[in-house]
Length: 213
Image 1 (cartoon, rainbow, N blue to C red):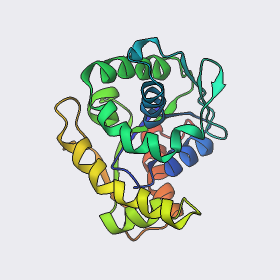
Image 2: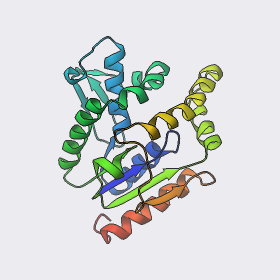
Image 3: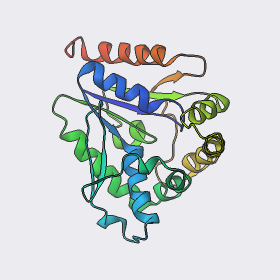
């Protein structure tokens, strides 16, 4: 069972994906975290991103990202990485390497996996059993992102990155963020997290015919 969830920044992809993976006993892959780790490696002065000793765990209860054995799960969520990640992720060579790593992780998931990002339904796993495009309007996504931070100044700074990231992610020439014609679109603007999770769960249950129960 492969569940692919695309969508723009701040739409709730991570929370929904982790909840779905935990509910059905699946593994979980945050592809955005992979690009963030490569971005951290880059801003630390490493020109060759292919040398990044990156590893990721796929436990939805405790997903972790490591570089050379060092846990960078929290560090890659910082403002410096957030400001630079879309530009790094737009590099075709970076995306080619990352997509191969992502497909390897998907192939190794014996029971199944929930994969979230910005090109999962269109590039990484276009044949996934469940394909969702999760979105929300810009004010809602800005508010959700700001709520993740306790520092008001940092919250405002992170909120302001949403529109900029939308523009970069949707206009890059290689694997842009786009809504495929045949995916299930869920607009979470006026939905609670639990409502979105239930909608995706229903799609999973219909797709697997109850085998994951």
